[in-house]
Image (spheres, rainbow, N blue to C red):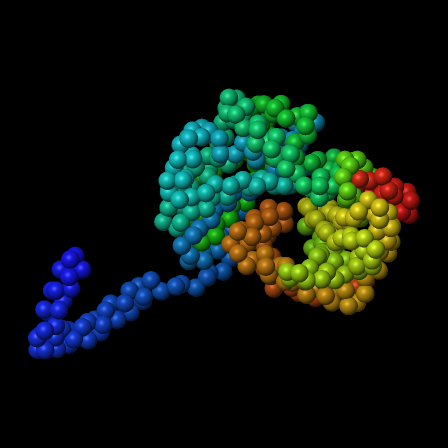
Length: 454
């Protein structure tokens, strides 16, 4: 019955041919006006092109921005403060600082920060490394302006209330527990290579969990948050400059001792089926761009894993993994302000790790890479540099770290020219006379010692 009542008015409306004709004529004329309105609306909201990078300086702050004219914007504050800047007695404070980000500040409570950012659809992140700590705010273009003060407070006006620190110790403990064996091995490698400074782990040691006091955190911030890099993606440059002008950073600018590469060996037995081994030589830092590019090319010439799903890895280290039992070998590199590492990471069953390690050490120390490997490495490195600017998230981090460590932002075109200008002789020069560093973790009973690899 309900269906019949619905259909009856429509049947009556089409019973008269004359009335039906008028209906069709009106319907035919309507799309014309709708299309005109739609065209004017599209013209009003026409997509604007991406603007080039702009860079300025406000005191000790380097300000960079790219106006993408997108609906989503990102604003980040990076400080030159990481685990390298930790002092004796404050080991792990950089890790604790990252875990305690977003707590109450002098301007808002933890609840106020969380509620206001979530209410406006935003997101506040914190990331850290050996030489940096970064705070990133994400939000829509029309709302991020209203959230800037929370980013400023979270990054520069922390309160570190004692009762809040105790409530978040479980997060720090969980962060330690979730460390994969690869991360544990690389931490041991940095410790063996640099001892102090860059040798400090990005994770807090177990004996320091719960011992990072409010005073310790305040001292670390006041001593190392004196210079910063502020980056805006999807924001006008004037808005980012205005945000940077509201910062009141400590007048003291942190200074660190030049890093010395020592080399050595650290082993840690943990059992299991696999052994994880990292071999490295001293790489190059941001202060030497050409040699840093050469080290990055050596990393990719050794092999950097498959580039496509289910693909095969190509590189000089393939010769080290030709064993009856499956094993994996990949190159890696890490560059910091004044030093770095370049080497090979190996994963294999404990029964064949000895053969894989010895062969990989031979390839690394002799830099036995072919011209074909160098050509392939140049293409891979260019692709990696281009991919770093493909998304706003990775592009923001790339700009922030460049401006923080090198005091300038090098465009992709210049990096591409540097890559083309590096020869195979430059790549081999990186490892000539280098001192080998080794770290092993897992079932390492059959892992050869460092003096057995020379």
